[in-house]
Structure formats: structure tokens, C-alpha cells
Image (cartoon, rainbow, N blue to C red; front, side):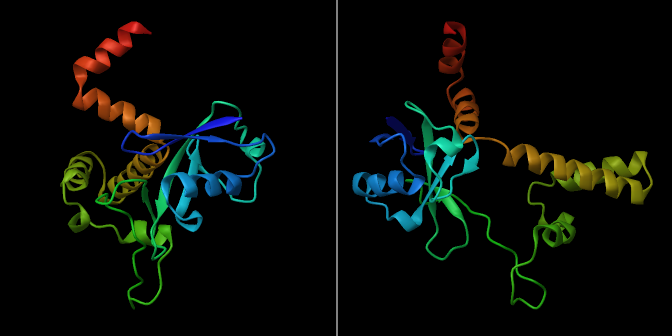
Length: 180
């Protein structure tokens, strides 16, 4: 079967594998095509990272399916889109003693208005404090952040590409919308 693997900058590779192939089999073929070592590849399908030992059928990947290739950082701190070298990444925050990565829950609790370079969360916090008690405003803000993060994290690369196309090329995006 043929599978298409998309790199963020728009290029796409075609991989031909048996229907019984594993994710690792796809990565090995990609290594020969795009010269990215298997251990630095992360394949994504429908917003989910694929495990090397699972067969493609486990993820319902069939002939003509599209996967996304991300690169694992060599230092193990995260992933970046393939072919992109300047994309910022999220690295684990260090605990106060600066020795071990903190859990996501702890990171969320340590978020302060000072960590907000756009000022959005600070403005929202001030707005909420005008309508709620400080404690309730804090709860609402925390829930708003959780929902926002969930929405951002659930975007697929296809979603991001569509949003970017609409913003960067509105005429082209409108033309495509009228054809469907």
C-alpha cells in the first residue's frame, strides 16, 4: 500500500509498504528517502504519535493515508516539525532546585502573569476580577487556560496548515472554499 508522509514545509514523500507493516518499517523507508535517522523521527496520524512496534492497521492507516513527520530533538527535549530548524519548542521547566523536570500540573500552577509576553492572560485576569471575587476569577482563568491549551494541543498539522493558508493567502483559501 502507498502512504504519503508530509513534511511541514509542504514537501511530501510516498512510501510503499505491505499492509502488515509496522510504524518502524515506514520510518526505515523514510530514513533512506529523507536522510533522517529512525531514532529522530516521530510519525503523527490524526493528531496521535505512532508507536514503532504497532502495525499500521492498529492506527487504521490504509492505502492513501497521510502521516506527518516530526523530528525528535537530539537532546530529547521535544519535537519539531520536519525540515524546520527555527521553530520554537516547549522544553520541560525545571523544578525550583533546577534539577528535575516538573510535571505539567506543577508547570501550570507556576504560570504567572510575568510569563505572559503578549499580556493576554493578564488582561483577561483583570477583566475577570471586575466580575468575580479574586478566588473565583483565578478558578475561571485556570479553566479558560486549560480549555485553551486543550484546543491548541488538539489541532492537527492539517488544521494548522489550513489556518495558515487562510491567513497568509486569503484569496487562495476563499477560491478553494468555493470549489468544494
